[in-house]
Image (cartoon, rainbow, N blue to C red; front, side, top):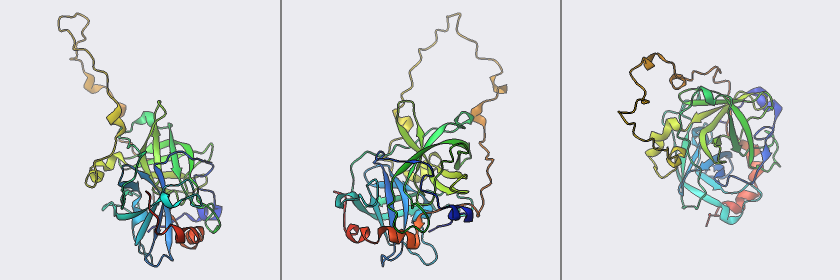
Length: 316
């Protein structure tokens, strides 16, 4: 499991969802706790429940790393660790990291967790729309959990949210950057949703939070969910695309005898279109920039008392 943070981000020790607000909304956003067979080592991430059996998260949250092998994953349906009840916890039966996840570039950092027991909604919709230049500067919402500081063993991870503008996009990655309000994701938010917001107040996950160049003052890279629908479909097709609920109005067939019908034989092929933009990124992504689940002694301090009771609990 990748627990990498830029050195200056560790020194800053900012809160999760930097400069964001606590929230009791988004029941479909869950806290993930991973542990080895002994229960002595663990890490925390965030995920989105997309249907009654599956949680969407990041590959680096579910991959083993040197000295740490994941044996158990708990899916916790609560606004904070301390508020979790017996009925709020489901144990995972399996998990799947994307086979092409690239630890250096952050590409394909997307994973699925299957819960051992089916749960009731609400479920997170998936944003199926493509991206264009017009999306740059639009606010996307980050929701996630995380440690208050890297070494704070007394912190209680809480669900937080922040709206940040889309800075740029590539075929597999989305970038957000908020120099004005300094809002960003941080460790422990890994795997959480970067959500597209719609005019009717609804939302859908467009990206899975992956890495940051620094929690405070840095940018966030998220894996594009729409680029991985075929891979998700290998495990489950039971999810709702945001485009599924958008019924376009049917236009009446033009009357060929109507003099007002335009002649469509012009040289439209010479016109440029924003949809042809390749979305090439301006941000340098390297092995020196990244973040992962809250882990190690800090994470174990957070859950030392809670997990003893939660270990055998299940969501009813």
